[in-house]
Amino acid sequence: MISETQSTVLTDEQRKLSAVVREFADQVVAPAAYKYDTERRLPLEIIGQMGELGLFGLPFPVDVGGQGKDYVSLCLAVEALARVDQSIAVTLEAGVGLGIMPIFRHGTDAQKQRWLPDLMAGRALAAFGLTEAAAGSDAGATRTSARRDDAADEWVIDGSKQFITNSGTPITSVITVTAVTGRRRAEDGTEQPELSSFLVPAGTPGLTVEPSYDKVGWHTSDTHPLSLRGVRVPAGNLLGERGRGYANFLRALDEGRIAFAALATGAAQGCLEEALRYAKERHVFGHAIGSNQHIAFTLARMQARVHSARLCWLDAALKQVHGKPFKAEASVAKLVGGEAAMANARDASQIFGGYGFLNENAVARHYRDSKILEVGEGTTEVQLMILARDLGLAS
Image (cartoon, rainbow, N blue to C red; front, side, top):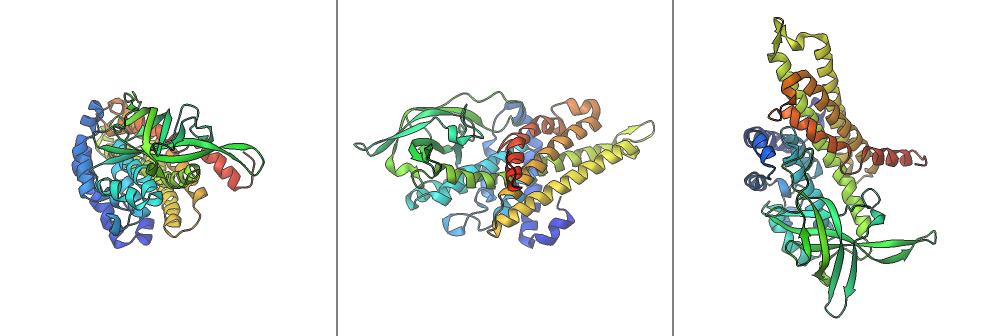
């Protein structure tokens, strides 16, 4: 559902894209969502169809195999999918923002030629291995290390990663891994770890994709811990400049928060649509429950949350597209969107009553799925910290 505000800023092409993805979500994704949620399996046939629609190549130039669209277009697609299935939406969001974007932005011509065609076509997925047991929000605490073996012209990587999306699917082709490659002296005189990024092809000896997590939600999304023991990759698999891994990651994370906010908006929208339909259909004591003021006001608040969340991500995405600073706006969007999704899931489940406690009901899945929207891509507390700093306050 496109709001009137969006209609004033979106192009005809963007509105058409949103409608196409929404139809695909309703006709293909939604009918299969419960089945794959219970099986805890990523439906590769649906991912393939998303590839055929060009969704994985949306924000990339045509000359590298993309669709020549922009980040707003990607967010519109993510929002439309998240209305009916957050797992499918995050597979696209992470596959593009964390999987493809670092290679497109920082890769050599040879790296792009090797990996981008299949990734942008949806024939393969890529992952980004940053988070560790002691290094999540504090990426500077990374313990995974990489040492140069000059004789073999290789890098040798040792360490572990956790919560890595798209890392263990049958079509995962490559994982970008951040690792400490040395120490550097900061301006304040202290030594800081030098972080670099490496492309590790799936199946590389020493790379172990551990069993998937038993998660509260996002059952269809592929998420694994990774173990790297003496993993050797060619020197040419260094992604970007040595020592720029952390800086490059921060740009990817800021952009990822915008798409994550769009995902959260879609989830909030899906809860609103389901609850509104039920409130009109469900009759108690001779009238639809939506005629009760409490239910009507609850739905009104849900609509307000959706509208606010959508305006926030759209504002951040437009700034990104036009090359303006968007770090604070991305944090606002992530904060507002995550809270809107969680609140709408709670309210929708309450409106459904007992039916809202059944996993076959979309709002029940949204209730389980939405909590991670206040945690992933930087917790609510991290967003508050960023915004406090933007206000010139210590945090």
